[in-house]
Image (cartoon, rainbow over all chains, first blue to last red; front, side):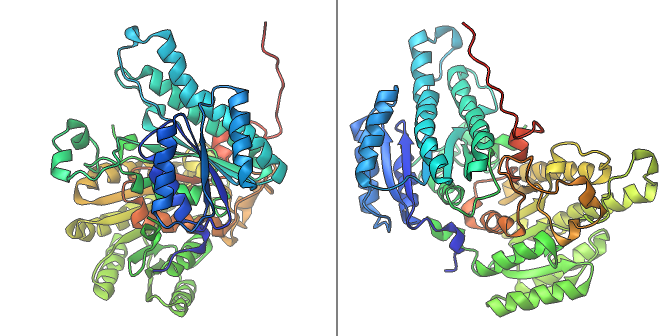
Length: 256
Length: 269
């Protein structure tokens, strides 16, 4: 089966930061399938275990994978994560931020601590890690950063204010870092996703949901829908695309 | 999961496939396994491109086509279906690039305006219309429209190119929403400044000479578009529709602020 050599990540090392979405293990797997070594950073141990077991299970061609479970809420926490990463004794080529902790409730009922916790998990984490990793990428004059975001970065949803703000923040971070670090051969892009699930649910059952019928392609997304694009955006061949969100969302973002 | 990036044995029709970005897409699509139906106004460049594809292994035919004539657009799609039995992907890439010399609005004649609309916009519409029926009958298909950064922002004295490229982005959205139920997707590629022989005309005067004002610090190269075209033509993009894939060195993300502009303003107490 002919594949362009440009989609190869052999010899690359990726840090994958996850707030715990169940797509993260599959995203780790596809990076490994493309040849990358993956180091995962998660909030909780069970999230890390899920990613590491997915990496073990797929017969990946990458090197020895690793990871650490530490909530990235402070400079200290990031230093600890990077110190753990340095045990791999590899430079970092790729950073993937998969920070999409969800919260949906009427705005009047959102507590300040919920608001702060959500912005911290989704935005502060990405800022802190991008800063730490970006400085290393600048030093090597090379790097690729991909932020997973929701289509709610560009739209409102009832009860979605806190989450939308966090995703719009990630999109603005994507554009800003692309502009600021472009001269250092660092490319920063986002993958925008719609409503997705990580299990295979038959279409006729999915379509009982109004939301699925509203989606132009009439099904929910699956991590396999975004995996190959993630690999391309992490590759050296992705040299002229930067600061862009690419939506793979079943047509939702172009929907009236 | 990566096998989804293969387009082995798919049938791709591409307009303007003999030169510039079109030719570069042809080369990458062929390397990823696609059979190609290559259209262009002049037969020389498309015959050469088809020969290049066949040398790589896949099958290819050249079909001289002026897409501004809807009967020729219909004939192009018919040729693809007749030769290969189906059409999996249409890439609307033909455009009047070299003719898009910046011109003050009062010097643009009716025929200048109409000629650009005929090729850039009507041509894309005619080809999409011709291809959408067999694609809908197959229950699958992909339409890829090559727009431009000038379809997202204004360019000084670049009326026809900006207006038609903006319209192509809208055409893409309407196609995506209308044809989703038939299993047909539509997406746009938005290239920024990527010099080719076609832009090496008076139009060049309106384009940056270097990437000094782009976040990447450099202009694009024609081969940058290859892996994006293959991705959009492959099953890896099956869940993507109505969307835009931009390759512009960060130009749209940064806007027109000079790239070197980096003020430092301390946080107020």
